[in-house]
Image 1 (cartoon, rainbow, N blue to C red):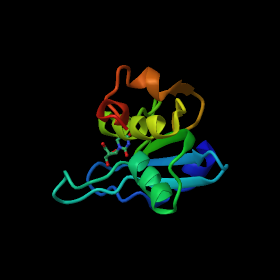
Image 2: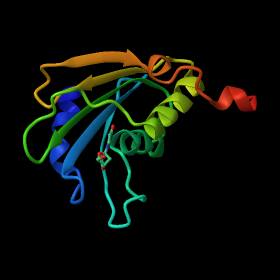
Image 3: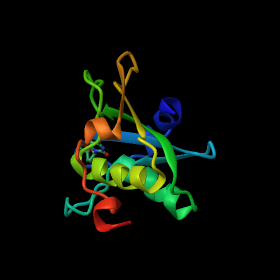
Image 4: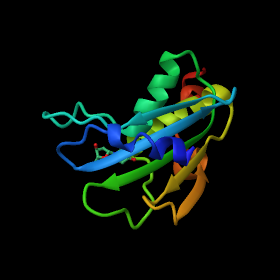
Length: 136
Ligand code: THU
């Protein structure tokens, strides 16, 4: 999954941060969807790589996921720590972990993949608010 994400890093649209992020999400059927960060001159309309990957999977009819991988590459150099999903992306991952009942694995790497941390969404977003809170 990290290699699938890594292969799409060049597609990131990141003229403002110069920080390319790519993500790959694995469905329970074993399909992988990738996504990159997409920035915007007005800043807030931008989208993170993780949500791009998840929304692509959803748009293609998949809502149940096992794992999501994240990797980033600054224009200059490499990341020294793994790139972890932002709060918004954790919330979106949490949504679909409750939809499927699967504690989705979150695989985070440095650009060179020398450091890899594997966690789960429940570890990264404890006591998260989700569909269950609305009786879903
Ligand atoms: N970004 C992601 O795509 N995913 C993350 O996990 C962290 C941040 C993007 C958002 C923005 O385009 C750039 O990285 C700098 O914050």
